[in-house]
Image (tube, rainbow, N blue to C red):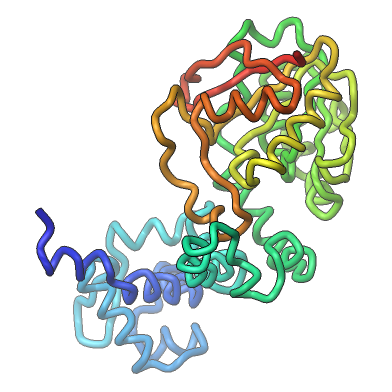
Length: 328
């Protein structure tokens, strides 16, 4: 049973904020380059030395960084991950999308009380409108989705048979194209279409070029709530439905059903859990957009409203749960 000390530890806000400040100031990178004394660190990070030392000592006490001599800091194993490229630094840094997400948590009480997204109350605009109004935040978001969200290391997986009979796949809401690029690279006979907002797909050229698949891709810069490119064999939705409440999820699935008819498939990769077990997670999207995680029964009901029938489901080797649907 948890005691008072355990509850206090769970309620600690100092540690996550200190960590985010250290990441935003690039402390781990400065240390990795050999800058270790607090005055030098503060000079390179453009901040106050005494305040930075207090933040770092808090993190040292929590097992991140070391202070081998007074006023001199060093990396330890926990801190070294902050130097590695990838999504972690972007999620923790306060200057881009990570800062927006950190601040959005102050809207959790409003979201719970109202059952509505609370992002607008915190930042003055609904989430997607705020992305449009702040291009640098939107670019940071796209980078995070590419590095640590939708771009899982494996290509897309089909449960009902393989890719041999598939000729054309449409990646709906595919961001900058990382998943589509991996899928096309794994299956050289495929051609693909990337669908996402114009500002997002504009950053896909480098992704497709580096994967060597640019000659097999077309790009459609649009909302996926508008009619989708029709007639493809597979419409792929990777971690997409999590972002949307039920009515918009049905609208999105309906667009997929329209485009896939009569013979295509809609493949949902991630963010749906098997069976009837109450889904976990989704708190952040509850605050941002009103989105939610769903189990298979809940998803099947939404799919039926959209004119889709679930025909197969299963767990991929990566552990992701995959669902396949066909137009009813």
